[in-house]
Length: 224
Length: 192
Image (tube, each protein chain N blue to C red):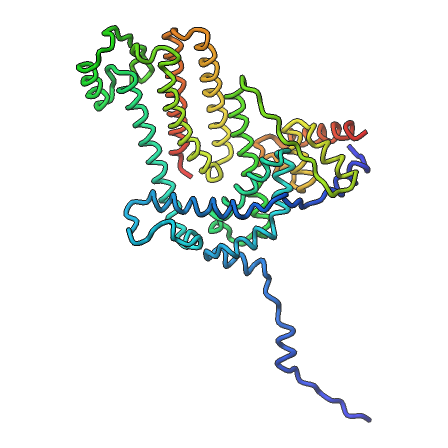
C-alpha cells in the first residue's frame, strides 16, 4: 500500500525521545538492590563483607555468581512454595495429607484441635490437601488463597527473570498455559462469591492454584 | 631549479594521525569490566532511542519509563553475553524489544486474570516538541490494535524485516505482512 504522505510522516518521526525525568538513579538503585539480594541470599558470605557496602562495580566482576544466585533464589522460592503448601495443608486446612510432615502435623492437629470432627476430604489430583471445615468458605479460604498467591508470585518473578534465556516458543507456551490457569482461578473465584459454601468449587480453586504452582515450577526448572 | 625539500614526518604529525579511540567502545569495555559510571555513560548515549521504542510499543508513558529501566538492568546483567559481533546499540535494541514484548505477554496474562476488575486507563503518550505531522501520527498509533501496533513500530520505525518481526512476535511472516498492511490502512484512515 503506497502512501507517500504516510511514508513522509513516518520518516519525520523522531528516532529518539528523551524521558521526562532522569531514569538513571532508579536503575542504579535497582542494580544495587539486586546485588544486595544476591549477596544476602548467598550462603557463606563473609561477615566482614557487608553486602550493602559492596560497590556496584563488584557486581559485574563476578559474572558466575549471577547464575548461582539465581539458581539459589529458584531453590529458595520453591522451598518457600513447598512450605506454603505444607502450611496450607497442615495449619489452615488440618487433616490427613500425603506428605510425611503434613501427616505428622495433621495427626498433632487432630489431637489438639477442637474443630468439628466432620472432615470432608475433597480430593485434589495429588490428594495433598484436605479441606476441613476450617477452610471451606470463602472467608476461610482467603488465607490459603493468599499463601498460594504469594508462592505463585515468587515463582512468577523467577520465571520473568528467565524469560530472555528461554526459547520464545517455550515462553509463549508457558504464558498461554498460565493464562488458562489464571482464567480458571478467576472464574472459580467469581463462582465462589455467589456460592461460598460450595465444596466442589473450593476443591476446584485449590486444584487450579496447585496447577499454577506446578506449571511455574516447571517454568523455573527449564534448562536455559 | 629550486631544491626539493623532503620533510620527514615528525612525531607530532604521527600523533595527530593516530585514530581517536571510540568513546562508546571505551565505555563499553569499562562497563564490562564492572565500571558503573561507564555503564551510566552508555545509558546516557542510548536512552533516547530505547525510551522511544518502549513508549511507542507500550503507548504508556509511565510503563515506558519502567520498561526502559528494565532494559538497562537486563543489559547490565547480560553485558558478558555481548560478544561485540553486532553494534552495541543494535544489541541493546534487540534486548529492549524482547523486554517490551515479554512484558506485554505478562501484562496480557495479568489482564486475563483481572478481567473482572476495571482496567486503569493508561497515560497515553502526548509527545511534545514535534511537528504537527509527527504528532498526529504518534497519536494515531494509539488507536492501532496491539499486534498491528507492534508490527508497525518494528517494521516502519525500527526498520526490522518481516522474518525478524515474525520471530520476535512468534507469528508467521505472512501474518506480519498482513498486520502491517492493516496498520497502514488504519493509520491512513485515522490521519485523513
